[in-house]
Amino acid sequence: MFALLRRLFPERIFRRKLEPAAERRLRLAQARAEEAIIRAHVDNALMFVDTLAEDLTFDRAIETYIREMAIPEPLASTVATRTLVVLGQDLVPYRRRAVEGHDEPAPADDQPKLRLNDASQGRGQQRTIKRA
Image (cartoon, rainbow, N blue to C red):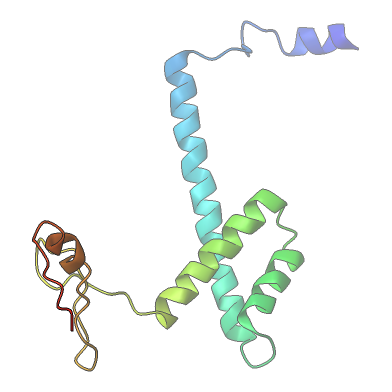
């Protein structure tokens, strides 16, 4: 049987080892294909969550989508996490930088400004302790 397969698929036509450049291109193509599959699953899971919003919670809807589509485990956790990230972007606001070059978020109007650097800047200065 093995001899028959060897005659049908000779190694000089179908090599076992790829050239390094061809293997890199193959890896890149595979990575792009996997990302496209993940994106498609996330889009479909979001549609599933929207469709079943009245009947199921979002985490339960995601679990149901993964189970119904029979997504294998390494891919299932990636799809679930990325779907939750997209859902979380709508629920949790993103804080933008106040001014260019500043890493501190802009303070809200009703909240005081956080002064995290004041303690470290004051360490170099001498403090006076008032005693009664």
